[in-house]
Length: 462
Image 1 (tube, one colour):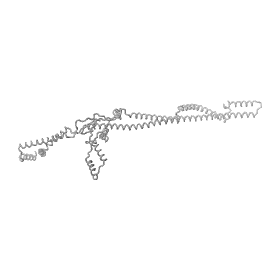
Image 2 (cartoon, one colour):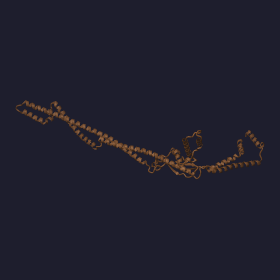
Image 3 (cartoon, one colour):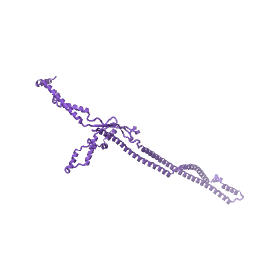
Image 4 (cartoon, one colour):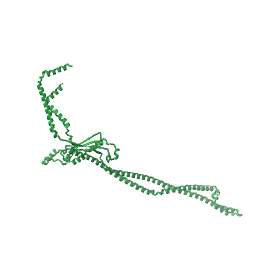
């Protein structure tokens, strides 16, 4: 061990045993006995004071109701679609709990139980009341405070006092929470707690009712709009069918029959026109070549045959008259020309007829195309009308389903209603007793400062 430490220990021992005078043993015992009595006296004084103060301590009673939140629809737990909805998240639960501190709920509680006249919650009127009295007594010296400002201030303070007595306890691991009220009267605490919960439930139902009214109004407006739209679509379809002729169901069949008949006739006319044109062109070519006399049409002509017989008879006479022969030849030539002109005219007539038939076919096809276009447009309009009718029926069904058959239900269920508490929440005997014991020990120790100082000195010095 260090020599310096040894010297210090020897010095302390010498000071305690030799240098300082030691008190007698009787005096030490007397001092110890006196210190114990002083400690017991302080401890007992605290116990007596606590026992005297216990009956006079203000009692605070707390009445609680246990509730559970449930994710539901407009109809509450009976809504069959509630099982398909997501559960309430943390923000939704906190939002519901914040509804318990709204001014409207607090005002309802105040008005229901007359808490504005209750001394436990009424705002303090000390300085304001003194100022009013001074203004009434000396109006020229003290200004009278504004009543509106005082009323607003008193209302805000009253709300704050009542709201401070609300008790909200929530288990963050579930949707269960407890709502209560703290008061010096147990019956008042139970009654106000029941009012708070009932008003909370009524506010939920009222909020749902407002939402339902808004949704119903919107659905009714939508239903009227869709009804008008469906009616307008039906009227537009009727007007369109009348304007386009689609209302006549036989028009299309008649046009299709005409098209079929004219198509067959057009084919026959086209063949006859080709035949007549070919014959006329052949006769014209034979006329240019001077061989028209051998044409079948000329040879088969009764007039040409008769003239040829007359010419043969003229040549068979003993005396031939040139004038008669020339006249017969001119008649034969004229007949050949008439046959050519008749063939050309016939070809022209067939061509013209073919052109007329083709024009008529073109007109019928255009009318059919227009009918098809109108039919397509009519089909689209009918589809739009069908969609409008379906939307109208859906809106009507939705509007009819808005009415809750069993009434609107809240999203909260009261699991345990509030009862009149039989024991105060403050003061509690166990914490009060523990506090009294601690204060008694401290009071007994405070009456014995010298032993405490010596103990502290010994702890400090080593």
